[in-house]
Length: 76
Image (cartoon, rainbow, N blue to C red; front, side, top):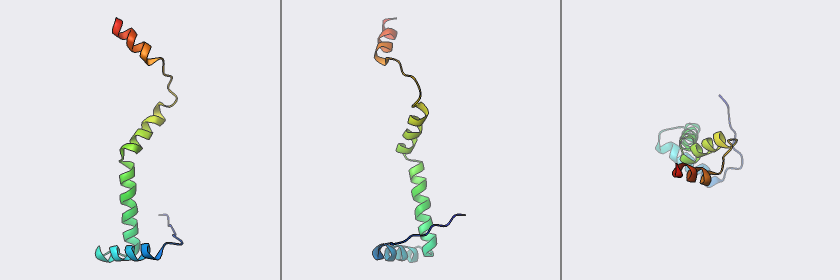
C-alpha cells in the first residue's frame, strides 16, 4: 500500500479533520482515507468520467458528413 504525506495543511482544516475523526470514532488517518476513498468512488462513477471514456474511445473515429447521411437515409 502506498503512503501520502501532506504538508502545509491549514490549521483549521487539520482541526476539522480531527473533529470529524473523533465524531466517527476513527483515527485521523482512517478518517482521511475514508474521505479519499469516497471521493475517488464518486469521481469514477460520475457522468463526466464516463463521458470522457466515450470521448477517448471515439476520438479517432472518422465521421462523415452526418447531415448529408441523414438526408440520404430519409430520401430512400
